Image 1 (cartoon, helix red, strand yellow):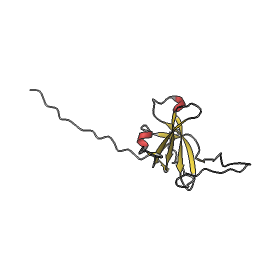
Image 2 (tube, rainbow, N blue to C red; image 1 turned 180 degrees about the vertical axis):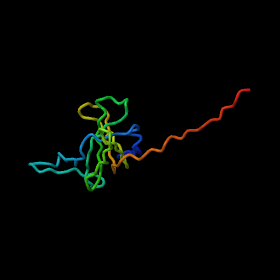
Image 3 (cartoon, rainbow, N blue to C red; image 1 turned 90 degrees about the horizontal axis):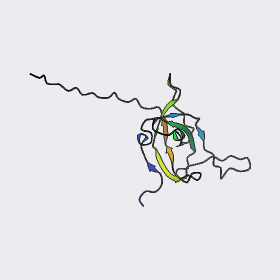
Image 4 (tube, one colour; image 1 turned 45 degrees about the horizontal axis):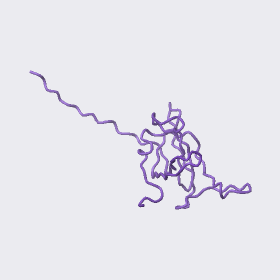
Length: 141
């Protein structure tokens, strides 16, 4: 099979309606390596970079309530800083660059699930205003 490892995807493919931060950015613990009160933090198997995670809420109105919040893991040498909050919004909108997904079977449900990773986290880019095309109507004689 040609596909091996994480599958590159765009932010728009994963979150077409956008997403919002609903948790703190925290370093991922390596529970297998941690022992005797000593905490070991996870490192990416390919790059060796520390792995951070943040919970985000998918803004897609069709997503079921129990599936709205997902974790995005970020590979970075230093703790990623969330974008600044916006006045009047209860949550902080965010976008991710360098995204990949890795499918796996969830042990608790036996269903297909996705591990979502990114290289960077940033404020959403301002979207360009929609272009409107005016059509000239013909007068009836």
